[in-house]
Length: 359
Image (tube, rainbow, N blue to C red; front, side, top):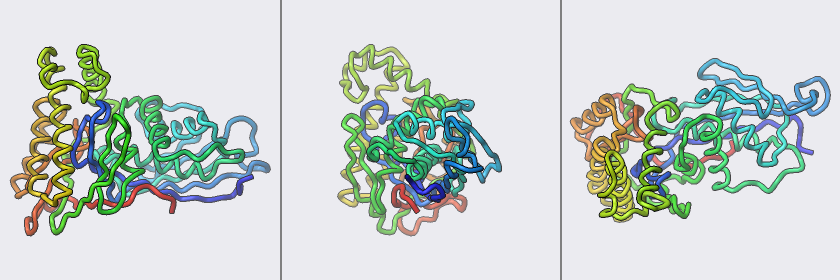
């Protein structure tokens, strides 16, 4: 039997998607990287017998504290919370692990970190991944085979889809789980193959600038865009929009034609960006970032005035390229700055960092 007083800490990073927005659920390509900021989950199990929470019969009881919010939650594994709340993420991870055959003990969970919520840096996926890693360490015998990174990513995506109410893909979870320092990860969402791509900045800088407008997948236009893409696939007779022919999409009604045009164009930009990074051509990467934002704004209609203003500010300050990140409808924007060019004072530099791990 596992140590009933075991204490674990797990860290999962946020991510910046360099390029490849709204391509994941369309069977295309994306090129994210993990950042140094993230979510840390500390957890310890209560004894299975005696006077603690674990002495009670029935499903395990978990107490969770979200330190940055100053809020607590206490629940039985399997209980649900209102979709969209932080409690739904915590309860969803515990519930999905139980559904996958893991026996969780009653436990106390502390959630902290330095990743802002709603800024488009994937705080939700970081929370899910860190919780998964921590709770897996607490699981009691007998244990199923330990899940691989892809299986963990799928479990976390089910939390987003079925417990939180956001119809997201696997991009954020795979980026958090598979990242390496000084590298981006090229993800093919048709095959789920992940390849490292060198992200050597060589004096250049990547920065994120918060637009000041919060976003949440479950309550934004994100789900509506997914529905539009699904409808376009039905009309074209393809499984994924990335499979569509550029000429074939001309028969689609608007706005479906615009959505499909963005997906096909963005897929091509991801390929071009990976090739540019392998050649060390960062100036070319900047032009691709600009083109990505234009497409997201005009064809996918996922931007907002606040996001556009943040992109414009980065360009006015001399960015070689800038675009919205994180799915849009608010959040942060990304800018690429050459050597000697100073970003705005309130922009934060980000560098490709390590993926999720136990501490």
